[in-house]
Image (cartoon, rainbow, N blue to C red):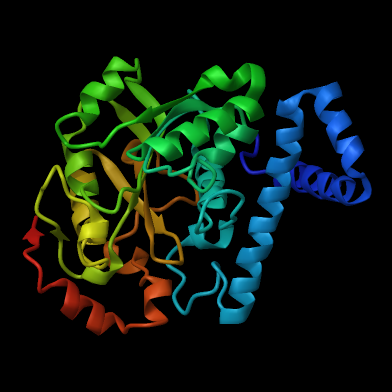
Length: 321
């Protein structure tokens, strides 16, 4: 039997224990801890405190909005029943755990693009709690430096297993960057979340094959047409309309099929699509068509109807693929 990937009990207990200690111990003992155990262990406690505080903030926001990640008028697939957020934004930790519990773990390796400070991304739990190795890439130098330092402290002797690279990824440089880092030829997980050229970067990837691919899709483009932004290696979403980015689920699904992948679902917040190599789809994992898997962008629906999102997004020069 494959070992369960997501076992949050240990992390939760350790987090609660650390939080209780932080309330009980006076500042002089905290300083003594730094001297006795070293900065890295104290930072581990600080990190656990940050983690639980972040979870509480998300829970309070969800309660205020009466909206939870797993609650949706449409349940696209069995994946949604397994959503769990430890580090990820939209329940991806649980979904990935479910997928790898079904298909097994081979290399325990990953590549993720668009990780920000490294603590709210799809591979943080795998790296920090499950011992996976891989490369985390982001275009912001300051965030990469912060994440590198934090991971080094938290992983201590195992910090060499996670490599950070500051780079602005394009269709032209992605494959070469990964090959230069010695990635591949087969990894377990590829995650793309850059709010821009996901379609073109995945299309241009050569020489590296992931068993599972997670790609952010743009639900504002609708579920019917295979649309993507035109390729621009210098595209930056913050300089454009926030609805004008990325590709539709139909476009990514069509591309995935040409690369040998099956769509197995989307998170219920309408942010990420999950693709599994077609020869790995088995058991309760089922290939879905776009209409079955597609979810609207839950946060945008709070302010704008889906019809208005599609009208606004499609006034831009999109490419049908």
